[in-house]
View 1 (cartoon, one colour):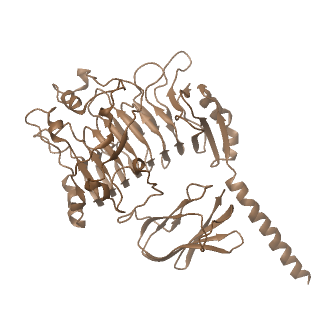
View 2: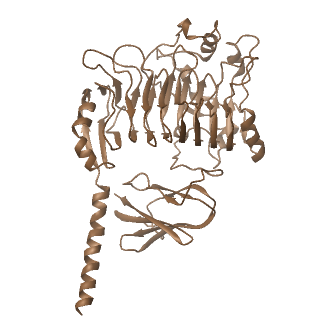
View 3: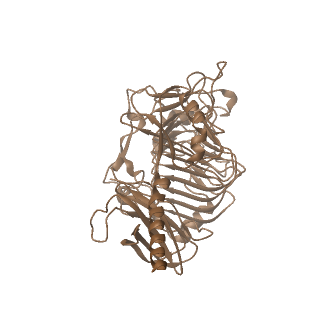
Length: 517
């Protein structure tokens, strides 16, 4: 009898500990940061010990509203051995982070140097500082094996790049962002992600709108990337090649809309400058369901007579397009945006694409010319990249959706809907759901090293099965699935902690998540 009650008592204590643990895991620390000069620097510095005690649950929260600005008194770097997470709350315009003045009046010339994981959500990052010329870079990634994730941000005016990758095995993610006006006088600058002489692990660009840039979205230069996933983006008015992967493992480029890009043309003596290229090869590539459109009459108005329009892909990537038979889904179909940048007459930042082409081809197009016809105005233009539904591009997406950023059509894009070729992981893995906590939907990502029979099951903390999200065979690679917060009978699940479990063969792994209503 004593043994029986002892057993019951231990189970009771164990259950209490289990129920209490999620409070420790999911308790988020939200530190409000007032706008002003150096406030973000000082709050991050003063909170360092607390952040170390709560490394993944601390968020620094910026205010939203008209003309809310956070001037940096120094580059945000060396914040300790913890992730740094910044977000905004409230209504109105996104808060702006801008380089201010350091002690002695020296201009802060970039915003962040990441030596640990960095996440920034719903913030305006400006390359135009309080005084002086446009910053060369918004941020640098300067340690091995870290992740920089920009989500729902606006990034404007960075001469050299938004993210410069200086160290290896890193992950760069841009999701739901708007990037604009990546321009300066030097024709090889204006990149979004710049990776030189480095082996990156992962590049993800999804559901972003990027317009008016002098050169490349991604410059692999002499570096490499193991996995690149470019999905449901709108690229408008980028002069040079969009993606120079140099050398890559797996490339997925799908559901993208490319309009009036490559408008600097191609010198007939040049063998490169394709919009998508992998100069030294790729292990695999899936390039499909994209629309490329160019108003060639407009573009050619800025070219010398002996310049021709860019081909879309180099020979390496054309090989995979032919191999997988997806060439027919990379179409050239006219689209008409509701409001593209050059339609705006009230904004002082008006530079037509043909004028940039003329500028590019003037003389020897070198930095020594110091030609900069692109006005430096800190302004995200009011654009609307929704387009006409009679275009073949409107239903070209893998799910019958419009290609391009789905933001403009009010269509949610949850998780990384990969499909087809995926990144083959080194093992069996279940990632933390996002968002977490959530209401009412969350995305679960997991990876399989080989083709297996898989189950994704939701349980209550008492072990009751709430819902089976998936049961069947899946191929190797990364997969995502969304839980809409409903149980197996279609009823909304109650607020609380739930367990989600990946089951495959004789293996299983579980994680906790929190539904809050």
